[in-house]
Length: 158
Image (tube, rainbow, N blue to C red; front, top):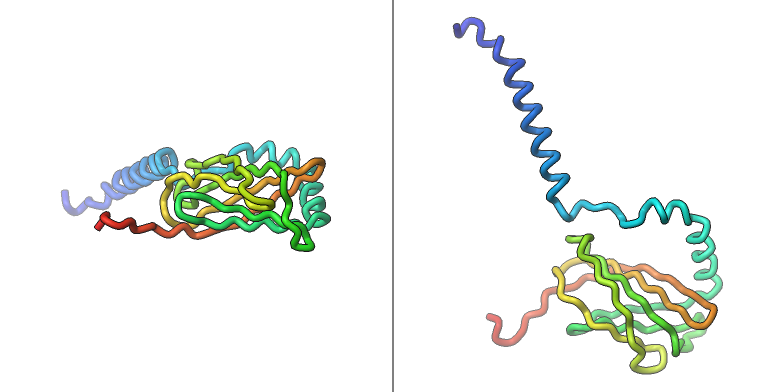
């Protein structure tokens, strides 16, 4: 019997292959940190529109500066000369790198000329992508940046 132990090798290899396939499929289905961009196909179809928006961004050269503060997101919007842009609609999409499915869409309210504030949702600390869309009159400006959200220690949480 033990002289022919190599006859079990194909069975062991097939079993190993099935186990690895099962693990791979299970991780692909249950792991939420590995996701594709929503509407990725639609973005590809509208590539010309996106390129046109890049050209408009280059013409406008606005500066959108998001800052993370305690429980809120402050956004400063200025034109290419540093003049604050007021009266704009500011839409924000927040995407945590750890859980890209947990996206947050916010509408910022103007608190001062060129200063907009939105409540910061709770989320995991780490790297976040901030996508901003600013509309004022006929002008639309889009921007993407990344910020690091560090855990905040509160008094009494020790």
